[in-house]
Length: 404
Image (cartoon, rainbow, N blue to C red; front, side):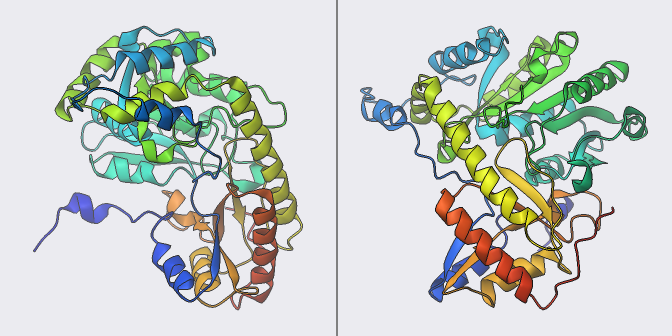
């Protein structure tokens, strides 16, 4: 049997494809510290489940294709606190941020069209693009430069008549980078100069550290008609399994096109929308406390990595990830070795090899993404195990390669 070129071209998730090795390790009695996936251990606000338990309708009926008005209004109120004022028509509820991204690609691009994305990037961008025959064109960034953007002229060289949008994750997954105001203005100017959209994946908006100010692409007035914001309750409220996201834009022609896709998939689950509506009543103090917790976790992880000989990384300023260059021959081989062949008193660590977060062949081979989503004592223990693993790994090299 022959499968489509589309599906054959898609890569397996670098975040999930090594799970069988972790399961094998656990089957042998090892404890695995999971730093490979952005699954927070922070408690979901209780309002989510309470609202669902209190749901009194006798029929679980279809929701509208654009989403419940109660949830849409809750999201509008949330954005108003960021000085982004939306009408109901500017917000469409999706099955997680993933569907919002896929809808954006489908609305903006024909097969063969291109989207510029700073790499390394969230690996599923590749999957979403591949399944609709869209090409990801990477804007390469470097660990030694904190994964900040190259000059405008370098990015402009990548733009072709087929370039439809620039997609950015801000704060960045997997790098933890926060783009400066100058960088955002540069991207805004490129969008204006070349008649492109900016697709802004801002699901980590609350996770900004060290007192840095956060600016949304939705706050840049001159491009408000060409900004698409991707959002989700997954990370903000530690509700990854709820699968509630949204796509927002002030470009009403775009939203009308996206509505066709929303109608085709009927609706987002009714009960999860009920729960998500309640999440947006969560006190601001919850998000403030979560931010402080993640910053303290960041500090533990970064200090430990900087103390490991041969490791290269820059301090992440947002989200809850860091990409580190490791003194190993191959990060994927190292991760597998840690799971199959190494432990410290029956415990080991799992990370996500970073090669799958790049579109440029050969980049990221000795890099890994680490998610600091574990409680502090577990994170400290995981760092001790990682250091021991790097010292014992047969494929260790003297130091991580510092040039790309």
